Length: 340
Image (cartoon, rainbow, N blue to C red):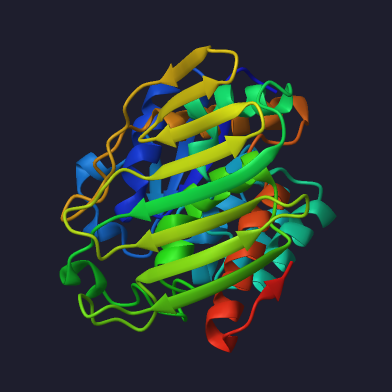
């Protein structure tokens, strides 16, 4: 393989900007050869990544024998079909979250990539923040001891105009509301540090703030195998929007991750910190955040293609958060605790 990998991008909607910024900064590693959008005539020149050739035919990308990978940035309900076709053509895939609109479709998507032996990475970029990786290293090394408690808070704001966009916040296009679209990032980070809980009990509502099909507010209790308990507080109805926060209690100290910064207090008196403040996109400007965690996921994906290794944020690892979201949804609908 040449030093610069040849890839294509599928989709140029709201979530594409941090990908395009990242690709620009990775220009020494990647050649963006194609951009596929359904209506190329609607693109403005500033929307184009590098020198990509724009096409309305997905087949142009699949039929390019030199193309090694695809970044798929389209709505969730399109993912399975696009990934199936990409994997069949031998193209590696980096997929914008979520994997798909349901756990069943997400599992099928991961399985087809494994069947065709193509790399599958997912844009759950919070795991790649400096603070997240520093805390993961501390936990894995046993510095903090055994987990005793966990709380996960994601209190964001979205105006009604956000949900007036056709398909947004619907089961058919997005697969749900706040859990699968916004909170999925913080929930995925939580699970990367704690593992899946054994049981969940949840309440989910559409608040008076929004008119939409799916939930905008969720509260849940988590029970872990070794006795730790936890909580989830997720909403897009908290004006003006607040930084996401994970707080973990251990037998040897406590740790918090808030807005991209880690703070650890140990029983032996040590205080540890890592990371820098990260803005949270909220309100009318939902993409107002730093793109460098996106860049880290993309760079890792490129390295996985070169080396044949599993991406750091792999499709199979992303199934964990889909299992949690499915369990939370089932619990809220049934009024009962759900075991994972």
